Length: 335
Image (cartoon, rainbow, N blue to C red; front, side, top):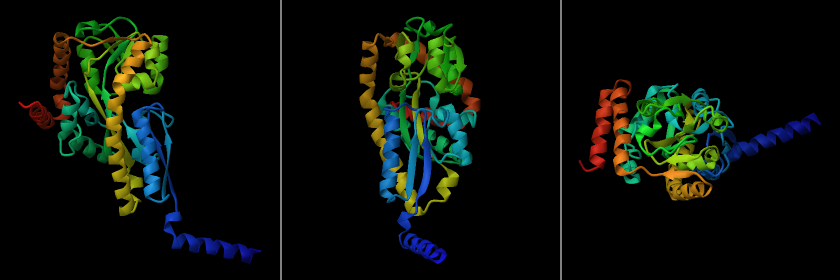
């Protein structure tokens, strides 16, 4: 019997050696997005493409909706190699490095066209800064996807001007740039993990929050709110990341497959997210959420408050980076 088992084991090893595609590497991918969100759909598409194109060599299990923790917890775990992949919101990772929310400076862009030129430019200051900073923390940025323009919701009153924000208690992510905007506007900015937010809104621990239409709808946050203002104060971009430890163990062929899959699903996610935004707003409005679009005059006040944040945070991000970003913004607007 022992000889028979040994023979079977030896035969199995020969089969695997002759067919390396049978060897399988298991990996986990985490993110904070609710099922149905464009980023969640992209994460599942990414896992599927990688498995198909590596002929099963890399098998990625997706854990949505903060099952593996908040963005910051995921970032730390990916950096340590405890989690292999994540669709991350780098603006929530400032506990790791303050440079990871440079793209959250208020009103860098005001339109999708401007976002495409500035945020999705691999040679631009934003992608270069995020990629280099993530690398310092043992993470590889594979692609960049859209989160959306952020809005303000609350349960107290309509916010029509920047002055209406004063006194509200608003949950913000762990981003100095976003916090600066709300503090300058006179709100009480409260940082807490995203997975605690819905209960905090229900219980009145905070009055409101500043995610955009997609996350506010898909995470059902609107059910605990009465008012939403389309301030567009920050355009948010996410990163498809992989642990440096996991990445260094892949063959060059599989690295190329994983990178190409990430870039493909990121492009598709941007299109899908933009197509869905108007529908989310309509559905929330139909459910009773008041939607406020600031007048051009009111928007000037929001933008002015945002620009103060640029000045306040220049020492954090560096004069050279801020100068380069201003030049890119001016070029995108034809100045």
